[in-house]
Image (cartoon, rainbow, N blue to C red; front, side, top):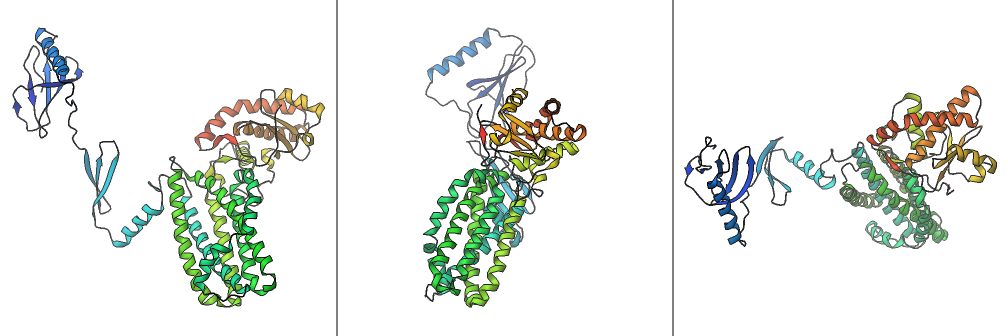
Length: 493
């Protein structure tokens, strides 16, 4: 309610629509032109707003403000907070009514009030809430569902194979266990030589950072190899210790490699900083299908695989499904860190078509088994070779002068181009070097002159296009702050 100019009266506009009498004011809240908005101390059931209108601050209004200040000083211990009215609403979607309310701490709480969906839909929704990240599918990157489907299949077949292998080991050792006993004893038999495999594999961490997909596939192939040795152990019981030890050694390497590559794969799907949620839900799915796989393995061991002939048929079949599932998992993961293969593919696409590929664009084109292949359109670059094998001392100073402001040097060869990085080179430095190599290789074809002049022209061309290239790469989701070249050699000069 706004009074006409010159008025000095004070009115109350209550939620009931009535104008009440004067009451004591608590605080000055806001100014709006010549109107002063004041919040009164009202009973809990009444939400009131007071407006005072005046053309100028006359003596009456000044006295009023002074009284307010004095009153505050007299009552320092009295709560000055205005009662907060709860903010909530209801939303109905797909036969589900939800109650949304903002809590005093600012968080939004959601409660299902009415759910008239069929039981099937409610079960599916409950499953998604427990085994998929919050906000799915908008909180994850492309490919997460396919990755999860094959991950579940992988753990199912792996658990079933473990039951069969443990049962075979116990037969080879001269025992006659029941299938249920095999699942219990498996926790004891996987020690021993397995620890040796873990220690050896721990030295390969840098390579796993560079090629997590390749090492994840290798890990499961080694796991199946170890399982196969255990399944075959009853055929030669006199070599029980050797076969069981070698099998567990392979499994030890597989366990470390699988765990080490888990985090880079999960990180590729984290879209909203929800890595912990992704990890927790991923492990929940793994646990669920491990339990289901153990049950299926027990059933197989009691029926089809009770004989060695049955194991010889079912074991390889499960192993093939297991490895295929892992390969499809890795193909679905859009890893967004720069390594030699992905950097070469990005540069090749840019030089050839002018298009910048995203992690999702490259995931099905990566060579998961042999990632070190050279890409001609990217300049056939090899990175990480020893410096003394790359360039002669006399030529090194010329190259260093050419790339004085860079953290790399390039040496053009007849079959490939060598790139050597400084110790603290980042992904941006690797991209710059790769782009120079690609341009230089293209120019050398035209002029048949792989000299320093070609490198200089290619370097100038790279500087002209690199800034927009880098900006678009980062917008596509690539992490350009680091370059993962595995065990590649770097130098400080």
